[in-house]
Length: 213
Image 1 (cartoon, rainbow, N blue to C red):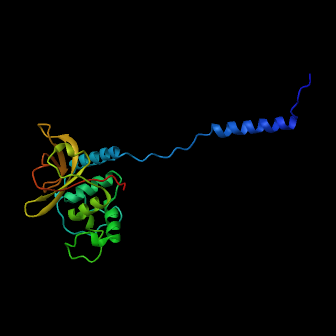
Image 2 (image 1 turned 135 degrees about the vertical axis):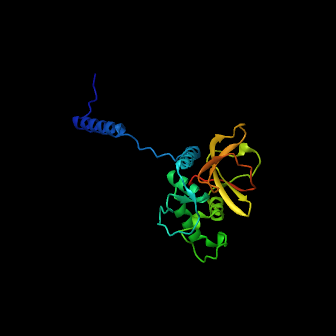
Image 3 (image 1 turned 45 degrees about the horizontal axis):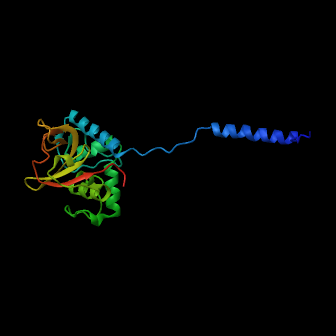
């Protein structure tokens, strides 16, 4: 009986190929880094908002020259928008930069309430009307309902206070004593506080923004 023999050189070639394949297959395959889910970001934002409650802040919205990026007024002062900006920054998003870049690109989309002819990174992100436009352009605009179940932790709510004063706060994962309404972390004049005030004033906006378009 005749047996077909494979030349030794061919055997060496096959062996080398198998060895190389083993090496290649043994290497870990790089996996794409998954984007943080909206719930993950909301959790970070809520934690950052809760952290603001530990800060003693005097209500002061006066114009200040600040750095850029990561510019901030002195830690001892601030208004409602500063609380939101600081919470977002702690969660990894610099609203000063994002608002400034968006206003530079689409200045006419923003309200002309202050007589400015160009963006100003010292103050633009510290104004509720500007934040409303930014969140509407780059986040989710949600119903301004009277149903507390529509408001999730990490959501942003804006109101009009008496005297036509715009206000903004962050919904957190705590509830009113009767369990019916989510609490709001905000600064309405007495420093950072957490209160049951979601429906105390006319709601002008309800947004969700996690940094992704």
